[in-house]
Amino acid sequence: MAYDDLRDFIKALDRAGELTRIKAEVDPILELAEIADRVSKSRDKAGAVGGKALLFENLKGHPGQRVLINQFGSERRMRMSLEVDSLDEIAERIRGFMDVKSPQGFLDKVKMLPMLAEAGKFFPKTVATGPCKEVIRKENFSLLEFPVLQCWPQDGGRFITLPCVITRDPRTGKRNMGMYRMQVYDATTAGVHWQRQKVAAEHMRERMRMATTGGDSLGKSAAVDIMARASGGARLAEGERPTGRMEVAVVIGTDPALTFSAIVPAPPEVEEYIVAGFLRQKPVELVKCETVDLEVPANAEIVIEGYVNLDELRTEGPFGDHTGFYSLEDEYPVLHVTCITHRKDPVYATTIVGKPPMEDAYMGKAVERIFLPMMRMTIPEIVDVNLPVEGVFHNLMLVSIRKSYPGQARKVMNAIWSLGQAMFTKVVVVVDEDVDVQNVAEVTLKVFNNIDPERDIQFTMGPIDSLDHASRLPNYGSKMGIDATRKWAAEGFVRPWPDEITMDEATRKRVTQRWKEFGIE
Image (cartoon, rainbow, N blue to C red; front, side):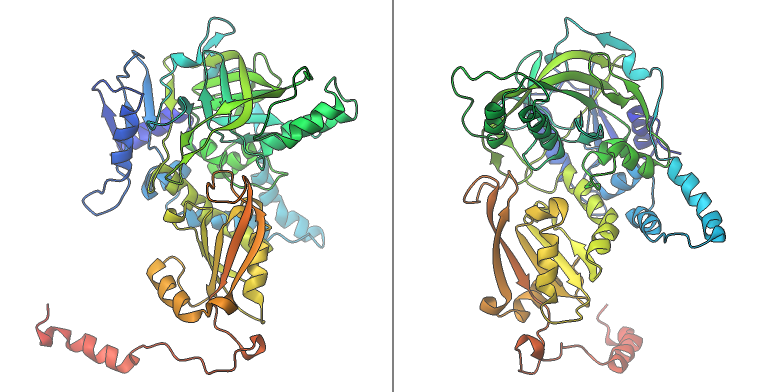
């Protein structure tokens, strides 16, 4: 059965020997991050990287509060969080749903009933109240009452780093839950780092578009101006003060599958609450917020309610990011808090990012494995993909394909660059199906033996991740594709392709049988 909440998962981690409780006093300003960074890069006796999850129980300046970090920070804990022995189990479940064909007759429809009944379990349900309402504060509250971290010395301040940020599409009413860091400015305001390609940013732009058609009091020229500046640039001109706001809810500390759902690249039509229901095989229970028209997980530790003004941007950053470098200052919307609800003695869930490997590496690799079937649905020739941790996920993708026609590797590159968040991939390397893309040493050997650089490397322009500090412009720059597949005559390669060096099987078998004779071991 699914974990009821974050506390249920903490108990499971404790029972499995995957949790370390730290009772010594620790400062949430820098010190806690340094401890977590060392643990996330440590190795156990078997050589596995990741250390244990950490529960800090004595926070300087925050008596009685607790902080959980590194909960996803190993391959084992990532599997525990989703309650599977292998992430491929989830991929198989996804594949099963995608393989469903339209029923052709009555018998086919009857056969589909069990699957439809199972799918019905995924949808969230609203309940009257829940633990997140144990304490309701509509006044005299402060974001700074929580042990919010400053992770790195040059960070612009303290950042909420593991929030589930909930917004609603103003036209369709569909909810979105994304994970966008938040810089705490003061007791009641915080910067919300939703990059222009993110769904929450699109919800904000949609509110602005509605204003251009008279949907509310935001003037047309002002709305267009803000849309153009939505993730950076100058503020509005002096005296140009349009009005309008968008409601937001921020959830901190949920059951692990729900938190993980905030980062998955779900299809636009599918709410993350449904994704979470699918992952945990149990619906998410929701409660209505107190001051905004949104629903939040009933068992959450902390809920922050508020709104962003459509005309307001403020400097956010710098922030030590998962690239291993600081992302620079930029202009982002400002959350104005109207209410905070929380459990009694809430557990503050957080993470830090920086030079890999860190906790986010295991979350990213889980996304890679789980959603490979969805990539294959669009690009069926894909055999496997690998997003190396050192490539910080948007810098490098290794792809193996079943090659059936000339130029297919380039077709795959362009398909990847058109596929959701994969559009940010800076370098795509395509190899033949007999290359194990999970073995980076093998990929390196095959790629750089197989390519003629001028012939096999192509460049293109397009959207770039906002965190890419090397692109020529913010959010826009070049990408590179490398076709490292064997070249065919139909691709203009008329030289013979050499065989790979391998020993014949008979000799290998004979040597294996006689190995002890040689006295080598």
